[in-house]
Image 1 (cartoon, rainbow, N blue to C red):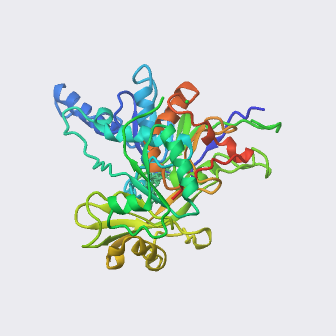
Image 2: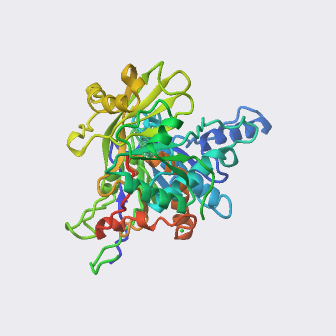
Image 3: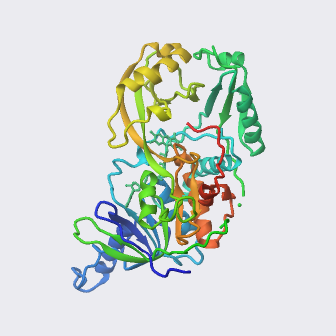
Length: 452
Ligand SMILES: Cc1cc2nc3c(=O)[nH]c(=O)nc-3n(C[C@H](O)[C@H](O)[C@H](O)COP(=O)(O)OP(=O)(O)OC[C@H]3O[C@@H](n4cnc5c(N)ncnc54)[C@H](O)[C@@H]3O)c2cc1C
């Protein structure tokens, strides 16, 4: 049975301000463009100080072909690729809705900003290779005419993954897959490690993989259950300083709400069915709190320090030029902190982060923690990998979420994949079928060894 109307009525605390509607061109700043256009029109009209009879700029549009919930890196990447790939130009209207334009809790601005090729699942490696190429050539994609070139401080120092005797065979087989996919990664013995990075203590390390950031990219219901197909017909949006939500009719909704995407899915009815059925399968994405510490260490490793991931799971990278370092470690399931707020646990650094890193880099025995913050992983409790593409039953809701700590680096490629799905009905550049929602119901996990 086809249910004709499903309203995504977003509650008081859920939806906020529309970042921009795009009725042509690929700019994300429609409001800015509008005022420019208005000024130009005013300057040529007799009387100069011309105002519209009804100013509707405080209202969201009544219709939008695509509404993207969440204006973090994922939502904006999807918007960018939709506008870039649409034919003819200006064919589709896209509305990005973001509730917090300070981005105070968004993962995008609270992340560590690392990008690596060292995954074990081919699709994850391809996503990173695509993104590396995008970031390296960012001005080909995002430069604005007459503006200075963008500088995103892309610092391609690579990742260094360290494995103990226990993890060595897996690390070696992962490197084989990474090379097959075109990644530039080499294996290093403890001795080679000592020679290349004299500041590392290789004790307990059996094998390392060192990934250079290269530039290359690649060109792609199920059970017998009787199901009800649904659609989201409108999204309720509230503009700042307005008391009321306004309905925005839409053809497609993109759920790019990061750590909160589970709640958005629930509003659309995802998972509201008998347990064990496709209808009863929830989007398994929830906020998980992660700490990042910034410390200074005058004797610490120098400029060519890669992003190091120790066999213990603790990691660090250099931050800037002043012997500052960023690092952390994901807690075990038992240690998961309460995600209620973003307060930092400083003891976690003393107990879980510092000891393994000081053992690995003896210079870190004396360091001074300067600051710290916490952010949310958009954590996929099923298999810690992204969820990409349409929902099988709420047929016009598409996901770009659940990246569990590696979403920033995958965003350029995922945005493109979702836009391809929306515009062409299939993945064209990288086949991300293993990341479809169906896998939760089928119990088919994506087995990625390198989740950090
Ligand atoms: C500490 C930490 C370190 C990380 N390190 C790395 C790293 O080194 N490399 C890497 O690749 N990734 C890393 N990540 C992961 C990465 O930051 C995320 O996967 C990625 O930023 C997710 O982007 P997003 O746009 O989906 O989410 P977000 O940036 O969280 O954006 C989602 C947006 O949705 C908005 N929203 C939510 N609900 C609504 C609603 N109802 N209405 C309107 N808007 C709504 C929110 O306000 C938010 O701005 C890290 C994450 C953390 C927390």
